Length: 160
Image 1: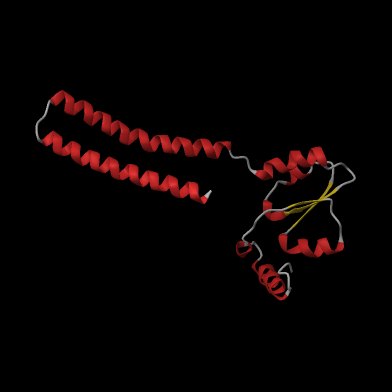
Image 2: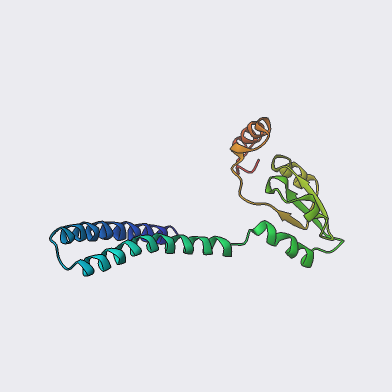
């Protein structure tokens, strides 16, 4: 993924440099007084290319973003299909999935903050755990973050 981004960035930089050189040459050529109708046509074509090129890139980015599906949205229908009434689900509150969404599944769901999950998992078994990647430095409870990070740093596995 990183390789493709760097190739795209390099391609965009090369295209920008080429467009600048072409535009500079166009200005020089227009100053020499060549055929007026040809100058106007080429100028319009180059300006149109300069306008269309970024628009096309923006269109590709927008199309990719619209095709992306948030895994939080996919989790609820998946749990509806796989987690029956007898199953239990532990969900992390920081995922910000609405309570009405959790009510759509038949399983018994428990939604708690990240900092409380480890302790609950040590006391209780769950059939499914719904979590994600979090930068806990930006958690809503800074005191819990300090306590959690100290506990995690003291634990040999880093798991808390």
